[in-house]
Image 1 (cartoon, rainbow, N blue to C red):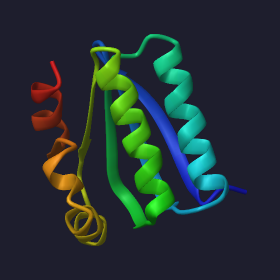
Image 2 (cartoon, one colour):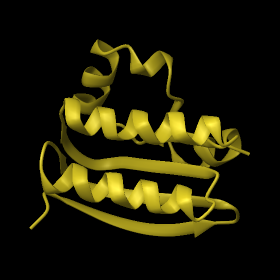
Image 3 (cartoon, rainbow, N blue to C red):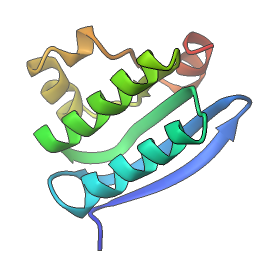
Length: 115
């Protein structure tokens, strides 16, 4: 069983993935990676990742998110994160990704910025 639960929902042209659990090496990051790749392959160009329920994030989780971010940028799309927990924010700050990947406090702000 994966360490993460992914729930997909739509708001207009934006696909929102609500994540719960641990985004760490193994089935969790494999599931997230395949979900993101499938969405991009199907033509999704606006993706939001709700990290409110993410309790842990390791380098594999980070690289999975970065790969999707780069793929979407190349395709003319956007990916953003929101509802970062303190622990996840610290990890993204240490890796300097807060300066690269757009991060927002809540869903309304994130939706407004990825249009």
